[in-house]
Structure formats: structure tokens, C-alpha cells
Amino acid sequence: MSELTMMEGSLAVALSVGVCRPNVISAYPITPQTHIVEDLAKLVAEGDLAAEFINVESEHSAASVVLGASATGARSYTATTSQGLLLMTEVLYNIAGMRMPVVLTCANRAVSAPLSIWNDHQDSFSVRDSGWIQLYAEDNQEVSDMHPQAFRIGEDPDVLMPVMVCMDGFLLTHTYEPIEVLDQDMVDSYLPRFEPEYRLSTADPKSFGCFLDPVWYMEGRYAIEAAIEGAREKVRQAAKDFTALTGRDYGCLIDEYRSEDAETILVAMGSLVSELRDFVDSEREAGRKVGLVKIRCFRPFPKEELLNALGGARHVIVLEKAVSLGYGSILGPEIKALFYGRSDVPAMDVYTAGMGGREILPETLSAIIGAGPGDADGHWLGLKPELLEGRSS
Amino acid sequence: MSHDGKPIRTGAVVDAGTAAANKTGSWRSKRPVFDNDKCIACGLCETYCPDGCVAIGEDGSFHPDYEYCKGCGICETVCRSDAIVMEEERK
Image (cartoon, rainbow over all chains, first blue to last red; front, side, top):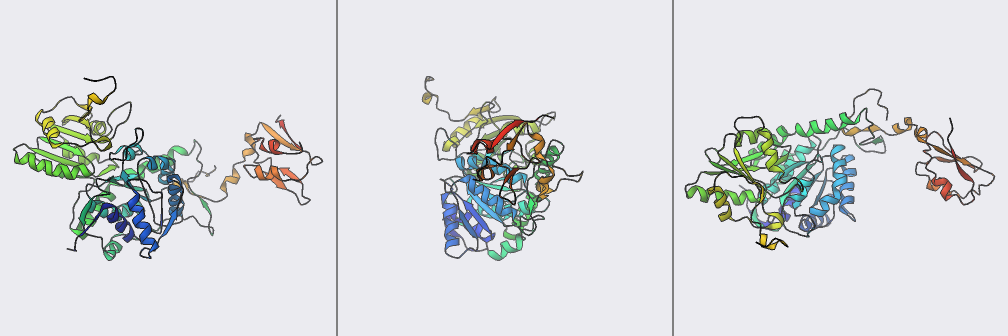
């Protein structure tokens, strides 16, 4: 095993992106993503990374630059968060629709208003329908390991879709952890060159993402949906092959922890998962059969894996850090929909938790586990009613 | 966009210049009519036309391209010498 180095999550990401040999990086700084692109800019400026770093005036421009760069056949990377991701949104759909395997790191942060720089998943959940593959990391070694996988998945000729690597803002980006920095030769052997079929070139001019009238448009969109649906096996294989090289196993589309004989299964994403591993251990020590399912790949959705992991469970508790305003939870109902018409549907409680950096306390989780199956359908966990104007209680 | 029944390429990629087959002049409800006697050859119509539909002849005179002109009327608006008038299309 290589040596471990204590470093900030953002630097781990920058070093990982660096050994993926990107040709073009373009980004606009925004908290808590800033350290990632600062570290990358430094690598480029000091001659340690042979990439072109293009400074821009906004996230919309950054996304447009990596779209155009990817069209020329350049391996292209950007990073953002929250409002920056929302500003990119129009281009994100174009990147996916033009089948550009750009990799974007999203340092997950709450969205305005009210203004918050702290963590939840509202930003990346808001673009879940854009066609980007979405991976969520639980710690900084995983997010470091995820970037070569992201490029490999996205650039696979059978996929050709962009990949968003999601890491919790501050909780991961600004946290120091011991990291095994990825070896250049190892990543070179893992990640083949990007060889697109079509390249933007003055020698052979082409138009990308052309106008399709009603005779053609549905087929154009269907092809994109088919590509991302078909990416599941590539996500699995990319994870397995990486595990074979490093010995590190973070799961594929999902990961299961002590869930096989569990009476209560927690479902979570991102850094909460790593905390819940400790929580599950403490619950087990207290004699309660609690397990954990981590959703590592949110798009494409791990339908088969979740049916297998949760089917027939006595009690499933979904903890999610995003809301569809006017409907409620997002992840919980998606899991429920998988079980429609099936006989093995588990009792399921769905909680909105950790919004804007709100702590999720172990005693709170112990209480809802101890209470058994209830009727939580997007219930806001840990809400303080006394802070709601006109609603003091 | 004409694909002649061929499948859509990945990413809806087409060869450059294929939009030329899409004769957008058929969208027009009004056409710009140029009066070359009034024209002072300032070139504003050619500069402002959003679709590159104003051509300059060998003698320096300006002419609309009715195959692609959508009839937006910007050329009439920017013309300094009232040399361009939008007229109803009547077929």
C-alpha cells in the first residue's frame, strides 16, 4: 500500500483530476468549491499539469468552455456548486444532449434564498433530469478515486455522457483526511484515451446538437435517455476495476453495510453515509439490528440494486437533503415507486434532513428507529417550530 | 432540418452547412424592399441583419436574400436614409 498523506478534500480532488490528464479546465470560483480550482490552477501555473486553464467571468461561461473543448476531443473538467450549478443549468442540458463526457465536481451546497453556504443536496438534485450521470462520495478517498472512474464511464463509446461527481461542501471539501494520492501510472493504465467519433474541427466542420423538428426530436431525446440508462453496467465495471487496482471498495451503484439481517435499513447519500456507518455499529452494539444502504449513483437510478437491498425489509428510513417544493421529498418517492405493484414493499419513512448544514444527531435517529414504522412522508427532521414566524408553539 | 431518412448521429451531429437546405424565407410575412436610389451605402443593414441576409453587389449596392430573410425588419429600423421599406407578402 502506498503512503497516506494528510490533506484537504479539495486538494485530493485536484490531484486526482490532475492524474486524469485533462486537456482543458475552466471554472469560476464559488464557495465551497473554490479550493479545488485554486489547487488545479496552481498545478497548471507551476507546470505540474499540462492542461489549459481558461479563466471565465461566470459559471455559464465555464460550462460553455468545457462543452466546446469537449467537442474538439479535449478531456474537459469543471467544478462548481449551488448557485453556480444553477447558472450552468442551461448549458448542462446541452452538454448532455451533445453527448460530451465532461466531468464536473459539485461541492454540494444549499441554494438561495435564504442564502446559505452550508451543505445539502438541493443543487445537484435540481439538475437530476439534465442527463448527467451523478455519483455521490462518502469521504475524501472515495471522491479522489471517483474522478478517474467518472472520466472512464463518461468517455466510454457506449455511454458518452457527462458525469457529475458530488461531494459535500465543507464536510468533505474542507476536511483534512489521510489520502492515498493516486499514482499516475496506475491511472494511465485504468483510464484510456478519449477518442470521440466526431470532433469539432476547422478541417472537417460539423454542427453539434443540431435543430431537430418534430419529425426527429423525440428520437434525439430517446437516444440520450437510452445512453444514460445503459450506463449502469459501466458504472459497476468502473468501480470493480478500480477496486481490483487499489483494494478499496466503496460499492458500485449502491453500497450495503450490515443490511442483510437488518430490521431497520437507513438509506442515505454523501458524507452522511460515512457517519452512519459508525452509527450503525453503535446501534448494533446496543442490540438493535440496523443496517445501511448508500446510494452512490443517483442517475442512472439503481433500481435493481435498491429492490434487492430493501425488498421485504421491516422498516426503511430514507434521509435526504433536498426537497421538490410543492411536492415534498425526491429520493423517497423514487424508491417507493420502484415497489409499486410488488408484494415485498417495505414500510418506509422519508425524512428531509440536514438542509443547509443542519446537524443530524444520532439520538434523533435512535428515536425514530425505536419508534418503528410510522407515517413520515417528507417530515422535516429536527425542525424548530419556534423559529417559524407566526407559528410559535 | 433534412436528414433524408438517415438515423440521427450521436449528439445530433451534422455536417457543417446543412442548414442551407432550410429555406427560412418561407417564414416571412413582410419583405424588405430596398431602394438603391435612396441608399447611401452606409452598410448598417448588412451589419445588423441577424441572419446574414444582406448581400453586397459588385457595384457596392445592397440586396436582400429572400431565400433566407425571415422578414424581421431590423434592416428597415436601422436604415438611415429610409431606403428600406417592409411590404406585406402577397401570394
